[in-house]
Length: 466
Ligand code: ARG
Image: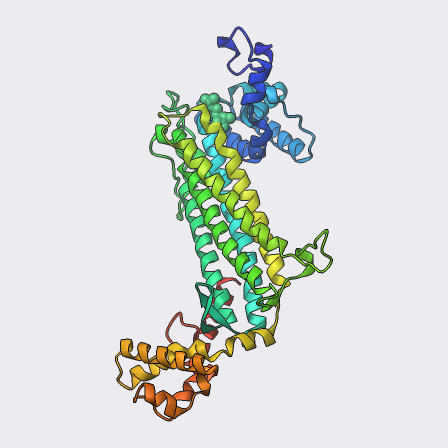
């Protein structure tokens, strides 16, 4: 039985693996999704073998035709995967060899170690680009809501206490910045993946006269000028899993960001805030309480972020302390990577969908932001402009706030005489500070929430997310 289903190494073995061992050690149940990458890798590898004369052009063509047929079969869902053949590589190789005798030469100068390293690098390049596009989709949805509510002001918070007024758009732009860095991290992970490991062999290359650069170019492992990029150390090429960690880390950080976005949305759509409403399509009800409309999509976004962090931890722990080079432990590197990718893609889509249906309650926002206490800092700045040292100004405004609180009046309802008793530098114009529009307009520096800056950011984001 070993000879039959494990022809790859059957020569060395007299007995096949126990059924339990087969179930324990198979990876085809999850690595079969690497098939398209494995197949392009095999096409490039066989093209190279023909290029250097290790196989004939006829053998190459037969292998290519066989691989194309396999891919078509897989895509049509007709290919039968066999767990006894362990992984995607051996399933494909054996299916191919059954049909194309020349395929017995395909594994020349190649090990599953450099093969799986290649497959994963091709996967990372694909996944980083695909997830990046999904994040752009979420960013576009956020930009559209910001645009539809350009003139809306809300309180900005620290410690979840009302702090200072900001444009609603400015708050959403903060999220766009976070997501933009997530995209940059993914692009960087893709750049790190862009080195071809084929030729590293099991760990020590090959004695055969291969052309690594040929394969690298065929697979698109090239720099901006089209020059081949091949890994520079055969042991590193098959041993390290830092790319997996980088990818999972980028996903985990994306998860942290979307969970913060989700949390703000949950707060804003609660009865306590009522700044916004979530679309029915992304909420669910309660099986008991008929009045409930729960923000499940946001809560799940928050929850998924825990899972993304868990995947990162799995990978870090997996690679830690392993002796060089390949160890079978490393087969466990794929489920967390695929899960991070799948869940991140879903999260980006769900965030886009949720945000696209967000309705902003302008009246509630206006009421919340009209609290004059939000401009207490502006009042201190007013004193600073009159020459008062900031610490003294801060103290004086604190006393004014207390005065208002004791009298149970709003900050701007105190009389000029009253505030002048606190500090002589308050002039008759002191209450003009509480003009919200003016207060915002004064926040004119780059990155600040003033209207001119927000307008600039709209132009910037529209260009970036076109
Ligand atoms: N399925 C294996 C993995 O993903 C492929 C590499 C197997 N290499 C080996 N030396 N057994 O790790």
